[in-house]
Length: 310
Image (cartoon, rainbow, N blue to C red):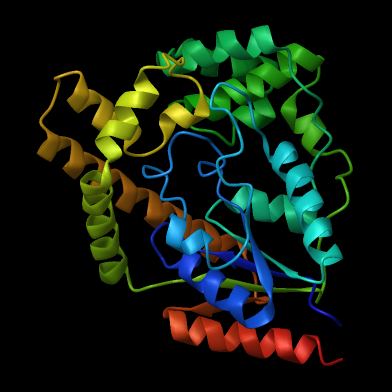
């Protein structure tokens, strides 16, 4: 079966960008972003988007194309990704989807539940309460949707708010919607080559620290200042980009730059650990695993060559 796309997943700083570029150069591919923070404009450094030298090596899509003031969901990304994949294939290229957002890959391979749009006013109210750490949200969810509440922690205010906004907007609990038939997956079976990059933990921690220090040296502090000047509500997803809050705290005079950097590096390392756990538990044997860039290039290359020879 012909391989229609390459999928590259892994924790932050694992080397996904370089792997995508090497495979794009080898197979005439184009890179499609699969990271939920790299879609937002204005945070190129803080979200570690590919730099100018990298984007010059292959065409790139869905990077920085969303205004941070706008909402952007998995459904939005799937629609954009499908358009990008069709356009790339129409040019005779190979789509290479790379990123660290597991829900994007899940939607790509499994489809989405038919949860309808929620009321913007309800969403804004609940997200503001979540940002303020309102403990009452979980009690409300327990009463409205006990099945979903049983799967969440009271302190996970973002997911609690999401579940509440669904039931209040639609009159049906999130658990009901999740039980409905899903939309069709965009890829399935053997028509893709998927790889998870899994560097050794100590190596990844060092990469994360070095990368964040380089971000600051390249102007991440100025980028955070420009972003702060927009005055976006704290509940907007882009405001939760790791590094944004820490550098903003420094710019407000609350902590030193050294403390902000240390906090951001620790937060990124913790996030990478959660990502690794998620990919380990959610992605099955159909995904290749590699701890080094060269082995990933060889494994994926062999699968693409083998699949396209049938």
